[in-house]
Image (cartoon, rainbow, N blue to C red; front, side, top):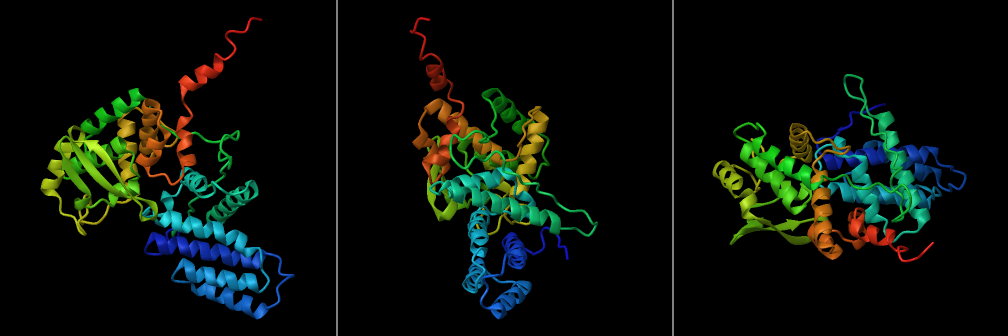
Length: 355
């Protein structure tokens, strides 16, 4: 039986549903020659059909299956449990918001201290999981959403050939993009909100999920800057700043008409939190109007742009880590990819040697 991609009424429940379906599929396909308790396996399969209300309850079922003899099931479940925690912390609204770049970010930040074999296993599990969803989802019109996740450009070890570099805008493109933000024909009731939100992401490098979940109390005016208190992954907090001249007019206009629930800084017409899909659509429209074409043109590209420019101008990797809220310095290292000054030194190393 096939199911709609966004089968449940929330992202968390839907992702848990697909992990349950995948684990059930794996329980039926793994070798059972070591199974000592077939009754327990049958009970677990029945429980999976009914579903669980949390990832921890599913974990308990997986442990029971492992203890009954299906040892290999844990190899599949552990990466998916960590993926569940990672993605649900991003505040996604739809399974369609997951893309390969997001999964590469997950692998990079999660598997940093793992062995090459474990990194390879994580990659394989993600590919198998999304391939399973490709084949098992179907909407009412009989169409299916296909992720086609390959992760070929994630090397697993920093510096390995084939590692994908982040998509970002050049300084010339940034200038065009900023002008396009101010000239794009948004609806009057959302124009100031959209301009302030997109500029806030571009000028600070905060995650889209962090921006849409900002509260009024999280932004404070201090002389010529706004100080933003950001709650990132794992509920870790950090502070970023944006000069008031970049967003004050738009922000003041938005605040004069803002009517949000739960003390949200930004919201939709109903007063609810904006979705990442909404923000990405805005960014795509602005990029198109500015004539800027990128392979990955969603809102996350603005974060890569900020980080790339920050490192290029500061050469301070720790500053990049602190500004972006990276748990590991290794995650920040990818923004050194374009350091032409260092590369020029390498190219000049033999200049004094006569041939």
